Image 1 (cartoon, rainbow, N blue to C red):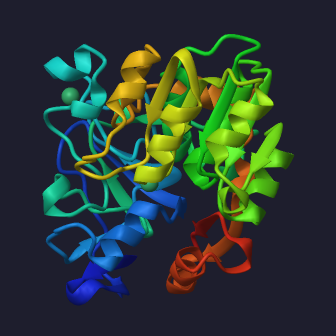
Image 2 (cartoon, rainbow, N blue to C red):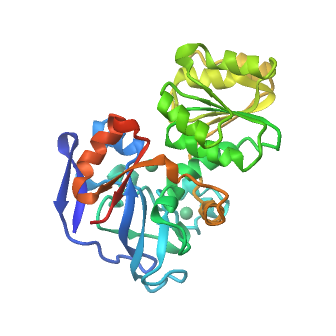
Length: 348
Ligand SMILES: [Zn+2]
Ligand SMILES: [Zn+2]
């Protein structure tokens, strides 16, 4: 089969490699019908993390079950499914407490030895461990494009919003109109906020956000976003401020624009340290700070919302590329060519 390897010196190369085989009784072999390129893949490619190269990359994917291990109960050959980017066992202590992001056994698809050594899904086939826990069925009338983001960025956007327990009529600010920020926007709408402020430096991303339901779009190149949000809300600020960027400035701006008793929810991978962290504002405004890795155990709920027409993040997929041309897909995504938000890689 064909698969995209991350090789030494940060080279990506599409190569022929043996098709995966079942290794455990709870495995599934999946024929990948669509995958997408993630910001994390770009970090791996650019050498931003200390990795052990020589692995198949890719962790966002949907496909058709081809083969199942003998303990797989929920799925059979021919089923269309979406997968969790970080598979989890469902039975370890952490999983049983709902902390599936901290599963003691599995890692991440396409992250190499550092992350569990699970070959990734920018390939024709992939082996999925603990399939009953980390796959969800895709209803017949839901396209691959509509389902593709469920197992990573949509789950993350949903988590970012539910961290704040928003009530109808609340105001919400989202910093970052990339895939996660736009998924947070789509998720925020489920809770009927009065206003959704979307902040980004790229106007084309803001315009997409506006078409998806942002009531106010703010480009901080035109002045401080928190200041603009405070002004529009009559000095109060927002009940929930989501950071889907991970920069010191966006984190500070979230804390500045949150109202007293509000929640700041961090899902962008931020700096390891922040010496100028505005702890005073957090304290004197009684803010709650929520942060962390997404638990991928809401995929069934998200798929249901998609199937019922309540949630639509398909507009984020701006480019479709064949697996044979995946390197071009990487260039388009990295350089944000042609107003790219997300690239879908399809099987040949
Ligand atoms: Zn991802
Ligand atoms: Zn587990």
